[in-house]
Length: 176
Length: 196
Image 1 (tube, each protein chain N blue to C red):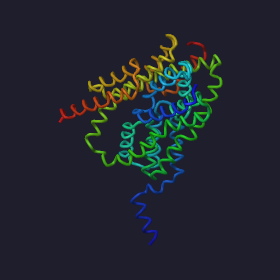
Image 2 (cartoon, chains in turn cyan, purple):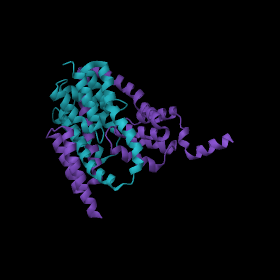
Image 3 (cartoon, rainbow over the protein chains, first blue to last red):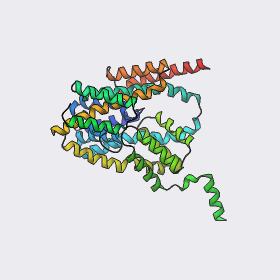
Image 4 (cartoon, rainbow over the protein chains, first blue to last red):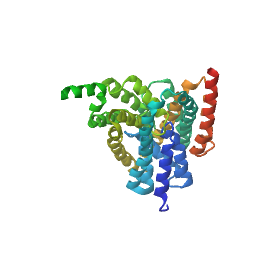
């Protein structure tokens, strides 16, 4: 690991958070590429672990996941700086945008921009789930769990926390 | 005399009187109640619109659509916008701080506990189950978001392109966004012109 790793990670997270239309899940595959494939700061397995932990904790979980990645790369300062790089730029953008928003609230171009942007971000959310599934699903049983969770989420109004609890329990009992 | 002046002020902008502490606590609650699966939006609505009556239903919908259309975690954006609306910049800091600081510290501590024991085989298995389930939930969330657009072939096409380029093409996000979004907006503008 080089001395510039903290800077590279911080800048990359700040850049990604500034373009994370649709929320942080849309940039997850890019983060995965950056920390696993490009820099080799952690393995696929470790990345999947951090994703799993982020599912099982209270609070702003995607920000925390980036915080854990920062921790893996350069310890506690990395955790704090990565969290700030993840929520700081979007908060500044929200603040400025909200002040401008009323001026343009009924403009027709806004509907057009939204119509072009939203489907792309939705595709990216589904891609994120797929990328995480490939990292997490070591065999057909884990893949079946992914499919079952997606199906239950689509056809029932069951609280996702119960599904996560069941998934963790199935894993813990050695069924995966 | 003075009382009369302050009363007219009050009726014009009652927002001035929301304390920073109240904003902090409200979004602390939103953050803690909304664990898992986008529940934060539900709680933000319940607290800011139904319980405290800080903003109207209309304003809330307006803020949600603005946030969907901006980068970053939407729910933090909702905190920033409501905070800005009620108390300006300092209100945004109070609301975002309430949302992030305490829940972040709790989540971080819990996460570190997991990480310490991540090599333990049972914990490893539990994490495997959680990651597989979480990936499924994320896919389903995306599919749900896509449902309202299912009658727009262009929307489905752009969603499919973004999905394919990211999941299988492994292109950087910036390339995908700058490649697809202008095209998508152009197509949406053409559709819009035809409807008229």
